[in-house]
Length: 393
Image 1 (cartoon, rainbow, N blue to C red):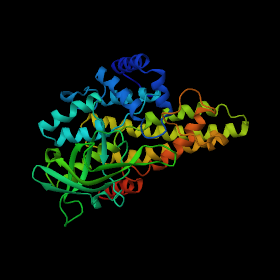
Image 2 (tube, rainbow, N blue to C red; image 1 turned 90 degrees about the horizontal axis):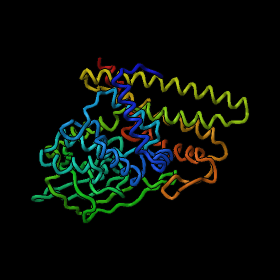
Image 3 (cartoon, one colour; image 1 turned 60 degrees about the vertical axis):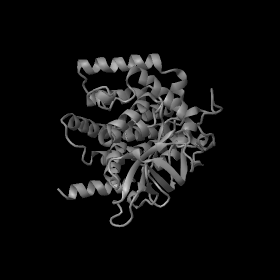
Image 4 (cartoon, one colour; image 1 turned 180 degrees about the horizontal axis):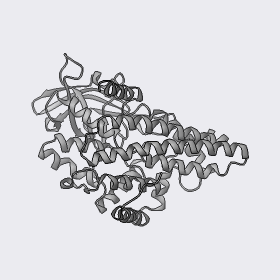
């Protein structure tokens, strides 16, 4: 889908393209192209973050006074589109896009000084302690406890599906500080260092063979009380604010990059009938991406007018994640028998692969993206949010 850019927007897009042509090495492009999960592994993703930090572009959405760029909504969209088109590594959002907005909105000046510079530079790497074995989409039922003892909280319990905890040196975590009353009451938002005595991190290997996820256990873990964000027992409000940022953002830049790759490999299909059928299905997917992009551009205009996001993040989450899954299904079909090869796209794969790279990527992406409709709030929950909003009007 095309849209008309102003002269200033065209100049900005060209500036981004020039930067990418100079700074995005073949190795980084390969890492971005082979990333079948939500974001790249630590070495490539954080390495790319540090390059962006040197240019002043690592945290463009932040307020200018904290290191943000002051870009317009359209500039943010163009930046995301150019990164996706260039196969830039996808960076982990836990620090820049999730906890940082919380610190900026709810943190003290001391907390901002302590944590924001390290997130901006890439020196610090954060993970998210939200889900528990019995508390996923029903996050308010969490049971990981933190008891105040003087200047510290003592944490006991466990968190699960903790992405990149094996790399993180800091965690933001929802804990229960009071029992009784509504489940949403008595939850607090804590930030603390990893490693800390009493924390055990155990890997969870996904069905694609990747190690992105972990389970984290807390056994009498003492963390400074100065890591409390906001007021004690008021963490649910902060948690909801963070989830809006997690679900927000544009899906179509990444989806268009995926579609571009599918078209390229689909051209190699030998059977004419199969090729024509796949061309129609890819065209249908492109129409769906066009429709989502139109919705996202409307959201950009609303954002520029200062309107609250409302249900737009939930709508985008449902449409974007399901389109992402749809594209991975087409990728597996195009790959054919090569997709059956069990060859995870991890750091150990260097240089040329013994079979087409896209075939290996297709199955890995398919398996990873089965969770796309679950993480960041399941799509069933998001549909309920949308329905409740529309029925209340």
